[in-house]
Length: 275
Length: 89
Image 1 (cartoon, chains in turn orange, cyan):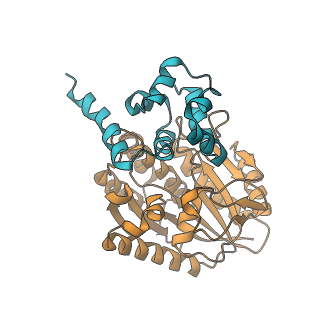
Image 2 (cartoon, helix red, strand yellow):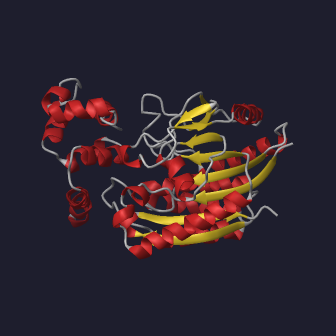
């Protein structure tokens, strides 16, 4: 059987790459050291495959057809199409069809109805954390896209259940495989809204405390009340909630939190202690 | 509710060939999209405040970046919406 080798989360704000050269040295050091520690922990987990949970920033989907949750089952995925992210060294990334199909079977058995894609473009949401954490070579990826971008969003309770289901899928996968889960995005940020650039630091710190508390219902209540006021980008905290669900709601360890106005994001980095 | 054709325009402009066509002649490209007259006028006027309620905020931000509006100017205009709203009695 496969093994859940690690659960991780990291912010993915585009300015981390787009504006890297003009960020203040202290901000660069903060971000680099956080990603460095994330990368160290991810490499230590020795994953053979990654399940990466991220939103789609209008790359694969449009309002013609906008899935709430989509699982990528292809053997190959395209790299990030953003013209400012040409430094990313991969134009394609390997998928893991067998694990992805097992995720879909497990999802169906547990009354989830994800959308399915045989070829996804993995935008900066997927690739910035991999790039800045130095995950090289990139293991085969099962991309899981959560709609964190355009309402209506999946509920935080549902996202937690998704994470628990992903952990079950890993545990029941018939093969010797070490699988890590990486959730990307968040914490608070506002993009293209009238309060663009606002970072809701109190929200972020309260959110971290509730992740640390190991009390999922309290986390859900908190997020149901506060997420709508923390900026549209804070919606990506749903991905962190899924990671929390995968870890059974326990073991959250903050690597670093740093509100960085120049990247518009309350930057968060974390792993879960599965021991 | 989103304005479908405005959203479609902004979404399509992520494709380099469409962006090139936009830069070569905005009016000609806009003719391909059945925008409502007031929406087209707002696009032609770079009216951030008028367009913001009609489209996803990420697409709005992308569009004005693509169109060449400096970030500081976009921030000034988008934040002015909030300032105006806050001033209302």
